[in-house]
Length: 195
Image (cartoon, rainbow, N blue to C red; front, side):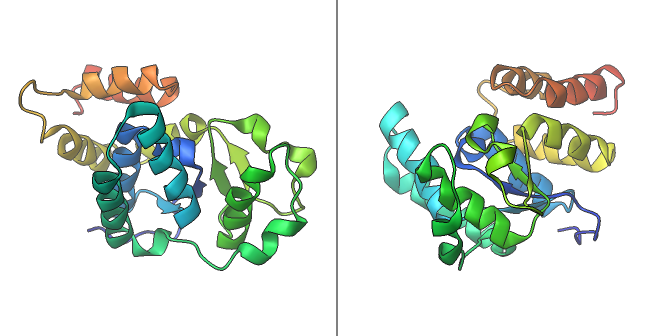
């Protein structure tokens, strides 16, 4: 595992960022290699797990094991002790307050979410994390050290043998989950024979 440089981009992940397994796996691997620093909370993890059980019919036990592995792999990621901030927050959906409270408490510069409208700027306190689409945040993370990114991508596709998965396949999947900028970084790496 690479030591995390002080300049590694930091962000809190909303549940919808951890919901797609490809994105979740990619982000975790990038953190392990020191290219970024992630945060999440138990409440956020419960949200994406419950959504996969409800929407896709997944069994909860393997997903709970995944959560335990995430917490073990990235012990710095788990944010606790933010409950006191929730009552003072006003958001369009009160159920989103725990997400912003955890992001605020973690003191990261960014909150990653696909649902930007859930966190309107006028409702956020001064000095709050910037709410940003995960694609806008991830593309520069992938670009900062192409050799390490390539190593991460190779680890990501290695377990897939029948059928095999390529880095181009990962780029296509990122496009499907509304991550075109990140997909473009991968496509350029493949085209330039970097990876």
